[in-house]
Image: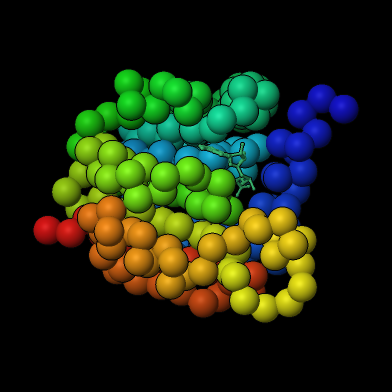
Length: 189
Ligand SMILES: C[S@@+](CC[C@H](N)C(=O)[O-])C[C@H]1O[C@@H](n2cnc3c(N)ncnc32)[C@H](O)[C@@H]1O
């Protein structure tokens, strides 16, 4: 079935258990914000961000999978959103605005990244001085689950340690998500 996986990601992201409304409220987005959704999947969050930041804001939906990016473009057309730019992973450094992002958002993607410390060191160049990185990631502890069996998780301790090494400090963390940690990082001054 066409776009099966992208649709599955969106079904999961939009399930009330994922608490997307609470996530959006916590991020307190403003019109004109510029956001990179890294590992955007089916684009559920990217499209909600695009609605929140309005026509003067912008969302960069980044993914490694061109089929997901195509799906996001199709959904933007259907929804009448023209402030989402889809970006293939190889083009990240030429497509994101230097010192231009208010937020880098990453949900259930951190464990996929190779060379994470180096990755986030490089991403700092795209953040505004007060820009933030949001990482929502499956927790390592807890029950016997798909995420544990397949290694699709990273502990919050690991994330905080790696982000500090990459040049960030933990600003806030939230514990309202049952399966995931949710942390917001600032650039070290
Ligand atoms: C579990 S899905 C999460 C999708 C979306 N963030 C969500 O919350 O619904 C992980 C996503 O990360 C993408 N991905 C994997 N490795 C990546 C990388 N190195 N850079 C960017 N995206 C990546 C996958 O293609 C997939 O879309």
